[in-house]
Length: 286
Image (cartoon, rainbow, N blue to C red):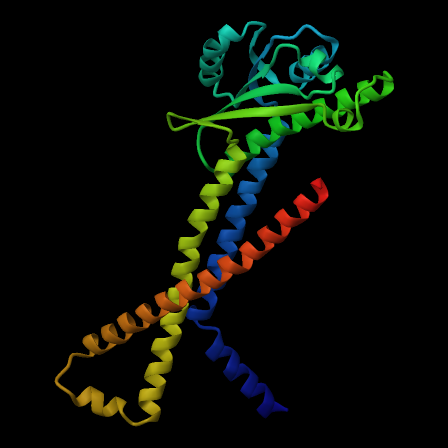
C-alpha cells in the first residue's frame, strides 16, 4: 500500500508542473473576464435604450406604437415631420443613442387594408462589439412588443385584416450608419454577425497551425530518436537552432495546409445546412 502511495505521489509531482498548471490558470482568468463581460451585458439590458422617433401617422395603431416607444425608451428626439430626420439623427448621436425610428405615413391605414405598417429604423452603430449588438437587440425587442400589442388590438377589435397581417402587422426598413458609411438594408446584428464570422476564421486557423506544428515537431524529434538519426543529425556542421527552426517552419507549413483543407471541408459542411434551410423555407412558402 505504501509503494502504491509513493508511486501516486511521484506521478502527481511530475504532472503538477508549471506547464500543466499555467493553462488552467489562464483559462480561469479568461472565464472570469467573460463573466464580468456578461455582468456588463445584464446592466446594459436593464437600462432604457436611447432613441429618437418621428411619427408621421395620426392613426390609433401608430399611437400604440408611439406609447410603447415613449414608455420603454429614453426618447431624446420626438417629431411628426420626416424633414426633421437629419436633426433627429444628430440629436441621437449627441446623446450616444442607438437609433432613430420613423413611423411612416398611413401606418394605421396600411395595416387595416392588409398591408404591413412600416418602420424606418436608422441605426447608429458605434462599434462591432458584443455590447453594441445587445443595445440594438433591446430596440428589436421593443419592435416585437409593438407587434404583439398591435396584434392584440387587431384581434380584439374584430378587424377584417387577414391572419398574416394580424400576426405580424409591421415590417422594418433598416439603415445602419457605421464608421461614416451608410449601409442600407443592414441591421447592426447582421453587420456584427458578418464581421464576427470572418474574424473567427483567423484565430481558428492559427490555433490549428500551432497545434499541428507543435505535435509534428514533437513527433519528428521522437521519430529521429527512435530511428537513431538524431545523433547523426546533431553531429553535422549545422546549428541546433537551425535544426529546430527548420523543423518548426516545415511543420507550420504543413499545419497551414492541413488547416486550409480542414476549413474548406468545414465550410462545405456548414453550407450544406444553409442549402437545406433554404429548401425548407421555399417548401413552406410554396
